Image (cartoon, rainbow, N blue to C red; front, side):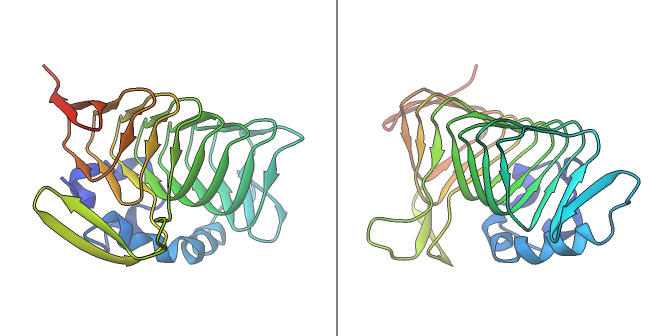
Length: 219
């Protein structure tokens, strides 16, 4: 369960056509910046404001005065970007999302209905439809030794060729408060991560991650 077609319902993102060109989601990370510019140039001026070069914000989105939005970035319909949010660069944010207080986004795709509401760092990651990051949970995107990130799937290790790679969250993943998703984490759809858990490797769909050594299948 690490392929794009297994993790995501592509009807819930403007990146659908782009993602269909890859097998594994981390392969898409390198082109997010260019993708946003390409999509942005096609967006209707009747639906999107264009406050600065490389930034498109849907007219129904709500951006609070103290939020920072760096280029390139697209903010979808009915999304909230709350006080103190820091969208550093290269963020494709879907519809009905929440980018909350003190949240930082960098080189990410957020599908529709994603919530990152409180003190989250999400970098070099893709969050699927209805994924939710609990308060203080983060995606750690660089290894301590600065070497390339591998995806560890049981006995199979996949070299990604990337030094920066956070986490791939499938649709409806729930991440508990203050959890850390280590570089190269892939979480299958409909899985839950308990608060304060340190997660690494591949988590099967419909799982509950209680701690780093206890992962159970949902009943």
